[in-house]
Image (tube, rainbow over all chains, first blue to last red; front, side, top):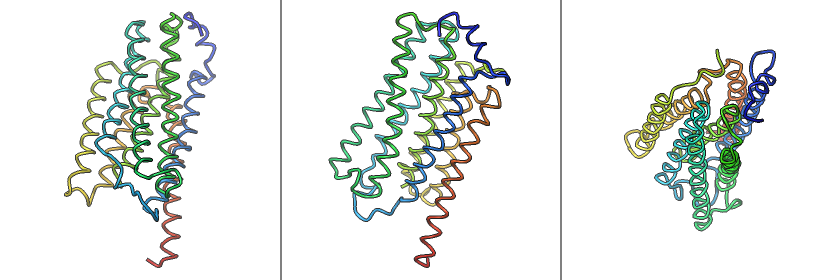
Length: 198
Length: 100
């Protein structure tokens, strides 16, 4: 979509008066709810059923994960500020907030990589016990979503640097934001269910 | 129900502050032994509040077309039903088998 996308934007409207791309993306997010719902259900069903260690209370690091949670919450703030800036036509700040959002996402991924490495070093592999299997699949799937989000954000940032992203593309940034915030709300649930309720 | 009417920057900052405060409360509650008896319900409520704040203000569902709320809320409720049903089925089966 180009800068002068007002007409293109109107062309994407459905008979219900909503944008078809946004509607499709909300439907996609709905399907993602079911994906993560099934993974969380699997984690909860096998919770406390491991026959051998390491067990969650032995290796989960709450202060470290709290920082990761704070990092992801701040990335959501940066994302809405990026969208607000793009909608205002303030592309200088829009670019800055998009980059900050992507960098905060990278910090989260770095933390997850460190956490996984630490757990493997402590003896928790994917097939060590039920906790390891369900933990890695759930948090790994979330991490894969964060990775996709970071790549998406950096792509938008590069487009903005090349002058190919303007106020006319605000909906594109909004849809990126919907994905990013969804990744954030999934983490809100994982942080509580996996880390805090042991 | 305009699709474009979003919150202000001030609202975004206030929501972020509330989210950080709730996270601090969650971690605090986790470490306080006195809360161990009510830890699960307290944490679930706090988590639900954070979830709702992000969805309402950052994902703009509070201001957007109600159809998006339906598109998101329907599968979300279904996912919650799947989680609760699986827990009941699994733990019910375990209790029947062990007699506890």
